[in-house]
Image 1 (cartoon, rainbow, N blue to C red):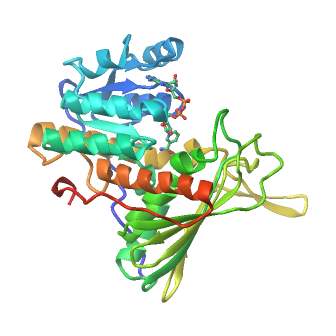
Image 2 (cartoon, rainbow, N blue to C red):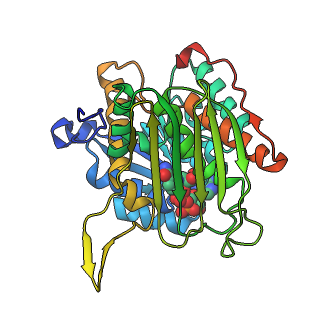
Length: 364
Ligand SMILES: NC(=O)c1ccc[n+]([C@@H]2O[C@H](COP(=O)([O-])OP(=O)(O)OC[C@H]3O[C@@H](n4cnc5c(N)ncnc54)[C@H](O)[C@@H]3O)[C@@H](O)[C@H]2O)c1
């Protein structure tokens, strides 16, 4: 078997960095867990950018992150987005605020990297798609970072090269140790399974056309009212069925698995682990605790490639300020459409068709 590889963005380093005067000035909205991480990445490990200013409704968080990375702290999102000194915007605030921030960035004609989901509802996602079309160009990249993970990229290469023959089915697992307060059964789809949805659309290069949620016993450790775990079946255009177990209170760590089964063979993600400890009659491999550890390298590549694409657009006339192969606003919309259909499927207990709008030429 050939060793399948696909450009994953690793290895972009200081060599591509421009003089300090050409650094991309990024305005950051949301300085919580991932926002603070992105700020540090931009300030320390990503070449060609700096954090110019930050805003968070939690002003103490914004002040702490601003001080850490040497960025100015603003009093509103608009103050960041509309500042002429801000070249591009990174949105890492809570899901329900994404549409407002992305629409404002498009209105200001600024490239924007928005954390997933693009928006939690189809209505908002379509507003963003419409705004981008009205602007006449792509400005939005969505933070589906698995597209930059080495393991997922090798799955993508295997499918592209026909290594496993024709894909016929896929099995996925998405487990988190515990869910944050206020997490709902529908958020298991709009916030968690949405990653599997984007991954499968990208890996298989097909739309998801139907979704079913299969009831299973709820964990006694799940918070009151939360259906957890849940089993989600995704059906693609060509009839591939993808089963995903989403379990956001599995207690033991962060565990993301994926196996693609084809007509000739199967390919699955390796579990990242730095070592195996043999002790007291057992060999133990660590399970990562959360998404930060598991996808650290993917987040770095994602942000690096976004910065490089925005700079190439500004200085070298590249067609769009969105990294090649990254999730666009259309991908964000399609993923949210599937997640929203899953929420309906959960309510009705029936298979739910996913009906997408016609794809506009901007996204073909
Ligand atoms: N790509 C991934 O794997 C990944 C991982 C984690 C989080 N996320 C996404 O990133 C976003 C942030 O997640 P998090 O884990 O950092 O959450 P968090 O709760 O730690 O941080 C969110 C921050 O947004 C701020 N905020 C909320 N509404 C705001 C508004 N209107 N304007 C400005 N700030 C506002 C909050 O005060 C908070 O500081 C979410 O959309 C989440 O789904 C993506």
